[in-house]
Image (cartoon, rainbow, N blue to C red; front, side):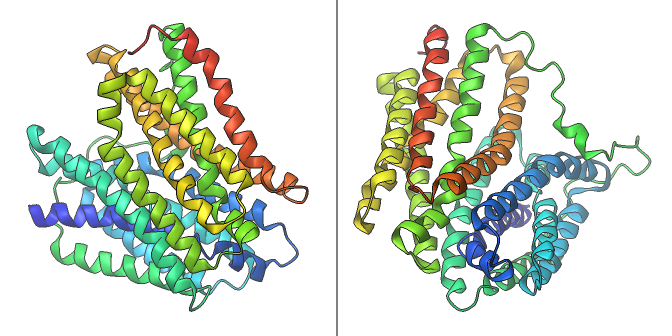
Length: 394
């Protein structure tokens, strides 16, 4: 059983790597396929398309795995991803890259299936530990993906896509041989809805929240959206401002991922325990906003080190806010709350990259630091809601 759990964790890591592996070379590949087109707009659209497919199809794949079993859904996704990345590696025109990114988003939306498999194979008292391992696997993939993509991208702009295809093929082979089915399909059970748009409907889930809590939920969405700015623009900004190579971009992304993970693991808890969740949230917002302001005016590579520390520290704010929201809700509504937060997080990953890349494309010719000033200023929009919700959390 532990072997099957390890395979599920590997699948989660592969999904994360698929997201990050091609990021360091994507702008250069877009310039090759569409030399006269605005790179920032296409880059943001491709990121948003991948995220949108994850939003829409993760619940659908989860429901399919309930009916037909976890193993066949995971195997089909891994096989589809391997073929898709191979096609993108040889993409002759830009539309093929768009179609490929859509398909890779669909085949990579297996997080819900992997989580369901982990729940199937673990007892209640050890489930949280294994979900923690799942989060670590995703974080490891997000660190390894850009780093590997930057290094392999030095060989060829198409090499990261070949590497992604090979990794998914390797995952398919291991899963075929080692992954046991954790849930038998229900066969003649009731039909499930195959309309993926149904997953986007939250109905009246937000109804009944107090004004203060609703404000905190809005703050959660705004901060999640602000957090999309570095992911959407880091590669382009690094190339434009500092003339980074693909390898330098990949290593910088890996460094940020490592520092962010360390901050989440070792800073958030002690900070919230000592100063309270509200102060930890405000400190995170201040650190992130300061990092953005410094990023706008940075002119030397060495300046990025303290900026990365500030941006990584800023991540503690989101965790503190989630704790505030969780403590302010009764036990019988925790699931509804987490569902709202997950939906808003996914939505921000679609809207955020589009919005920030559009702003960057519109302002970069005059000065390419404006987007970071705007991102920092958005934190000020959160303050009225935090004042109104002063009674929520510590």
